Amino acid sequence: METRIPVGVLGATGMVGQHFVKFLQNHPWFELVWLAASDRSAGKPYLEATAWRLNGVMPSSVERKKVEECKPGNGAPRLVFSAMDASVATEIEREFAQAGHVVVSNSRNHRMEPDVPLLIPEVNPDHLKIIPLQQRRRGWKGQIATNPNCSTIVLAMALAPLKQFGIRRVVATTMQAISGAGYPGVASMDINANVIPFIGSEEEKMQQETQKILGDFTGDSIQPLAAKVSAHCNRVPVVDGHMVATSVELERKPTLAEMIQAMDSFRSVPQQRNLPSAPEHPVQYMEAQDRPQPRRDAERDRGMAVYVGRLRECPALDYKFIALGHNTIRGAAGAAVLNAELMYSEGLLD
Ligand SMILES: NC(=O)c1ccc[n+]([C@@H]2O[C@H](COP(=O)([O-])OP(=O)(O)OC[C@H]3O[C@@H](n4cnc5c(N)ncnc54)[C@H](OP(=O)(O)O)[C@@H]3O)[C@@H](O)[C@H]2O)c1
Image 1 (cartoon, helix red, strand yellow):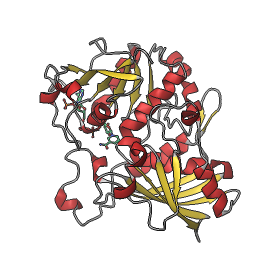
Image 2 (image 1 turned 45 degrees about the horizontal axis):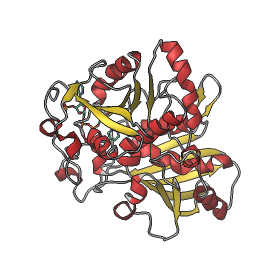
Image 3 (image 1 turned 45 degrees about the vertical axis):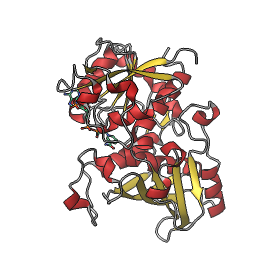
Image 4 (image 1 turned 135 degrees about the vertical axis):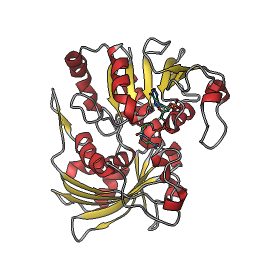
């Protein structure tokens, strides 16, 4: 691409915003030109407004960039990624879409609205077809697309290759990293050598979002998958990488080999179109009996693939396995950037 597409980040000073800044460095299609945050940060250079919490130093290209207010027309480019605090994202994202911006959001606020795609490019790229309806209904020149919650995306990617066998029931138990709670997150006195068996609203999100993601676009709506999904969500003392212990009941029971073949051979539109952030193999089966593990495997493939292991018969449902994904990359910034790449390849950024 000769001229890269200018992009901005709403909520650029926060944890997920920093992941966007890092992930977008040297992106072949997108050039990060605009950063915005609350009025506490607006007007300051990014270096001064941001307490950089990621490994490695803040990229020098953003250090001196002035942080803007999260207001449309403020020099904001057409494509903006959103990593804003959920308490303000609903209205601000709507204002941007109304003003003609393409908002690719990581926040939960609009995910379950019926005319908003809850997108995983490998799993439901056709859900983007709801966008013209969204624009007509709301009278928007712009649009909003969202990515799933960080644990949902791991489960939905692991289940997607199994959809062909007819998914009836799913029981998923998470072991979620502390980075998923943002900064400062969970107090060290609570999480060290401990497990916290509660993450507010997470179970409901996992259950509903999985059904929507694996649902079908019918021409004018997204029909959720009829499968029952039950989630137990736990916070564990792991830095990065959410694990999901999953049992699944299927309509047509494949062999173990067919299940592994379905996962390993799973490819979709991002791989066919060679989208820059797409992993070559989005779901990878690991044969070793003690893998995947967060510390060893979450960062493989730039944190963009989901790893599955320990597939075996389940005495209660049909099969059980463990799935792992990087929560702040595939579960947040990387997911949104891949969404935008898919949208560009569909002509939605023209
Ligand atoms: N942390 C994760 O792993 C994770 C994963 C998936 C999804 N999410 C979602 O991603 C979003 C961001 O999470 P986070 O952990 O990055 O939060 P965070 O670190 O608290 O950052 C929040 C961002 O929102 C900005 N903000 C706050 N109030 C604002 C206002 N009134 N107007 C405009 N901007 C405002 C903040 O700017 P200032 O610095 O100026 O206050 C900051 O840039 C949330 O919706 C969260 O649920 C987080």
